[in-house]
Length: 154
Image 1 (cartoon, one colour):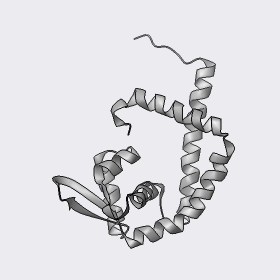
Image 2 (cartoon, helix red, strand yellow):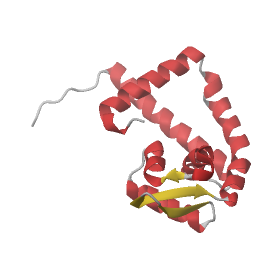
Image 3 (cartoon, one colour):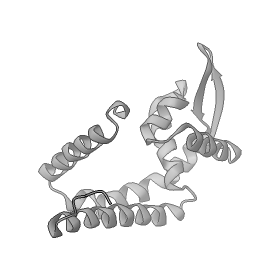
Image 4 (tube, rainbow, N blue to C red):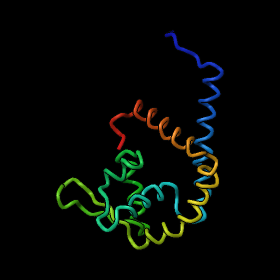
């Protein structure tokens, strides 16, 4: 049997605290968004699309912003298109590319979901951190992500 390094109590405590923290935060966000009819996955697509404006956004860039693979992105966009939140069209400069646009229905869904969602994010996350802790969390997150998938960072 190969040798492996066991986690120390401190390492185990920080790892499990992180796992519990991220799961609880994601579950709380989903519960909060459920009342608006928008899922967390929907919101992850709607917010960047709203920022992209009328030009829309390449599907691959949208998937990259969410950290999703092509299959998950395609399924999510199909479901959102069926609900009238987005449209997809071929990119004019790339036969394989897809441009995703936010529809009026998608804008309305985002407008309805955003106030409660942003307030929830502030109350349950941002307001609990000092500016220095926020910057530290960004730095730590980038360091970990660079180690996991260095090519996936924007």
